[in-house]
Length: 292
Image 1 (spheres, one colour):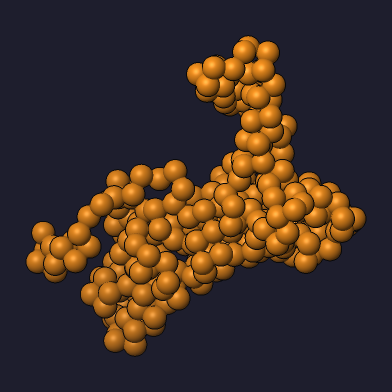
Image 2: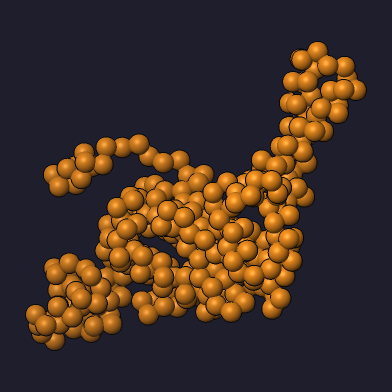
């Protein structure tokens, strides 16, 4: 079958691939448009595989809510520039809404969900090939609430930080305040009960050593340690932190004053825990132009 210019144009608009790639895909597929798309996807797999060793620590976090189900996710790119790209943000929306409207609960299940461009895994591969950077769906959390509970969602810095809270008994405004607190104050845990025993033991040992070095008797040092541990909890546990809109009360008290209790809070900060590369981006672009 003869490959016409209009066929190449249609395939290019559908996939975003280069003109010569589209022409070759149609020739290899005997003019079958769907087969050509599959061929380009396979080529995208080859292209994206070359990027697997590269570090994607930029990107966006986002939240999607429908009825009693919510999804919080982080999608990474290599540069902040790409994270502002409309094609990248549209991909995130497709991923988020696809998960939201499914029964998937894990990242593995989510990657196999179908979109208009194949599975979510296929979609990411295709966009990696088209955009030219390593892209990845790093993590998701799916939260389901009861009818007497509310979601509170907050995105900070355009999606560099996302926080999702679930409150029982309060309203969405209070829940959003809790999410804002989580985004701004970076708590390591939500409740005291979340803090691992080894973390508490280590902090207690540190504080006891400090108290003893101040020349305090052992019994006084022990009392000082307990007081300092309570102060430590106020720093690292969300519900114990001073509320940012009223420092005289804790977050737990603020929620309680509004007839609610905190049930769950999830906070994603883009790139946290990923070792970012330190490279000269302008030099990298010039190397690509030169074909190095």
